[in-house]
Amino acid sequence: MPYWYYDKKDLQNTPSFRDAISTDTENRYRKEGARFIIDTGSKMDLGYNTVATGVVYFHRFYMFHSFRTFPRYITACCCLFLAGKVEETPKKCKDIIKVAKSLLTEQKFASFGDDPKEEVMTLERILLQTIKFDLQVEHPYGYLLKYAKCLKGDKAKLQKMVQMAWTFVNDSLCTTLCLQWEPEVIAVALMFLAGKLSKFEVLDWNGRNPKHTAWWDMFVEDITMELLEDICHQVLDLYSPQPQSSGGDSPPAPSAAKQPKNEKKPPSITPPTSASPVAVVVSKPVLTPMKNGADIKIEPPKMEPIRYTYPAYPGLAAPYPAVYSAPPPALPPPPRLAPPPMYAEPPPPAPPRFPPVNVPPPNYYPPLRPPGPPPRPYYPPP
Image (cartoon, rainbow, N blue to C red):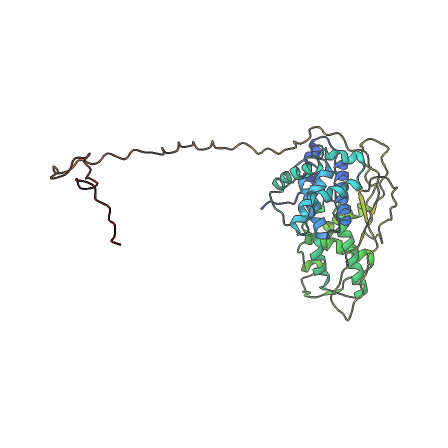
């Protein structure tokens, strides 16, 4: 089974980087592709598992291919098309392309070519070979709810913390965290971040042992505070204001400093509008009231699209072929045998062991009727 987790040095030495695309530009392309998948999936009423699976396929695909060879929006449609079939929420390819055309400008949709459906269907075969047919993907959502049910404290504050952590998980899809850590580690880190921002301090939890110094030690062992803070900062950097590019394909400038650990809430961003909606902002979480101490009930937050202005996509150096050609076979085909003749002569008879006695010659045929005149016809008496 393939291993899909990489170090940071591997994430900085991708095929796109070797193809003269800077790391900041590649990160922006990944963010645009992930938000485009989220926006398209939300408009088609797809579940969060389907959308998250498509984003994970998108990030894994570009660990083997360059953005200069495969346009990000075609790949995003292909990943969402495959994720719908894997998560048993299939959508027709033409419907996905129709929604994509409504979300993209004519210049960006021109990368789909003259036959967008054929482009997506051709890329699907390349995507399956790239991810090595490893289709099952786990997400932090299930671990988030599982861990939250073990915590003790004020139900209202716990509900608010879980809802905020759910929002952070949605936003983490725009980063490469799914290529760095397992989903349970991401769930613990974002619950830690949500607890700090919502002022929910975990003092007790079910299954607590004396060897546990913190609540997350029961779920993920040997996790350090430096690791938790690193994951939190990667998510908080998404909320940092990014200056708009003046033109060309230059990437946005990186954030000057990371958010401090004791920040109460992420800064609000109001980006300008344009004709290309490729970003998604999660609305304020909707809290479901608890009834008689029942289990935690989470209503996934609704996603509202906003619009960003990004520079034009660079020209393709070498577009991939429209029809995928399989490699030649390693071994030559076996030779074809001639068909047997239709009328094969029988083998010659074996010579007799003793001389024949009273045996008619081979060309002898017995008479058909006795010699003499032909018999008269018989007429019965009247």
